[in-house]
Length: 466
Image (cartoon, rainbow, N blue to C red; front, side, top):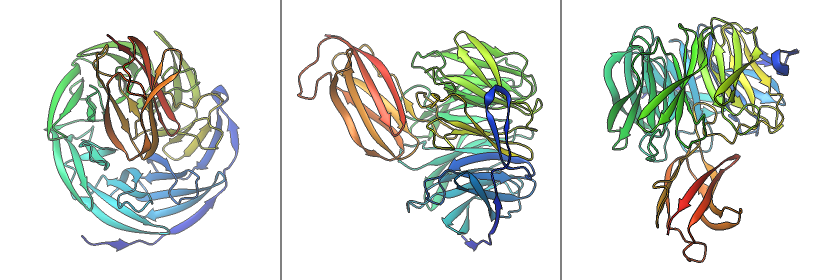
């Protein structure tokens, strides 16, 4: 395919005025001259150990990179593209230890890649059609260690639910759902704990919430119903909201103004209300906002111009306002911007790109099943459980990580290490045969399995029978 060398342009922005907002979150404006920004991705693009911001500026036909220099941002236009860029994500496509960029061009119905030879970028076409897609995100659907991506049909006009297999530099399109339907959101996550990425999805016009089970490494997909009678569902995101080791789902409606969560009880799903009067729920992210070890939910409301977080005090939820002044807030990203080991919030709106300093100093958000979109660390409950003598432990890494998987007894004494190595992104499955580091069988009882992957950690309880 033809490769195009792109012209670039730099503009320097200082951080701007830091304004107090609701709930003591400080409001830091990166840019207030955007023209319908749709999504933001935060990654270290230029390798200086500072988080840069990648933004799609839809109506201006721009793909924009904000290079971070001690929280002063230099605006770098990767491309003034025709075709209306909607979503963009960064990943290393060519294995050269630099992050490239994938972006969707909505009016051209295609996905393109920008190869990072900073400060120059070269563009290639990845997919010449998405069959009506207007949203996409990344996941490894066939466990080959490479990031694939999923596209969804336009929520207003309809389209197909597809995934594209990464054989860089070639890509193969696969169908998850061949029907032309209105899919506002589809999120990859391993729902049934088999080590393969499944898909949560909302069908707004059909008033349904479903999930697609990934069988045979993405070659076969089985649709399962979660709710067939829910009004105009828009957003959906995964998380374990009751700490039972199962993947639940939070769903919000932009048109019907509600936020609910679905409790996963194996093949049965129970709906619970979070808020019945929240205007325009258009994006959500489950995170432990206040560091209490319980998964909360951050939501933006496009028609209400609000960004809020709902504190999970199971079974009750308490709403806290982060900002009620940002016009038409869209997708966000939850990451530590200022290096204080507390995850902050970045939001793009109709004209603004803003990050909010998290006032909860203990809130790392790293205890959770769900990390910032589009990536998700996961440690699944072992199966079988209870077990004798062998059990299987599945986990998923969204990026290259230093990984330890350690078994402890109930007193906290390390029994054995199942892995201690540097691993690429992907799904992993490890068996424990109920022995310690010397090969001796352990006694019956409760054991703890702890996954540590970079800053992320989670512990599950396992019961060994004799």
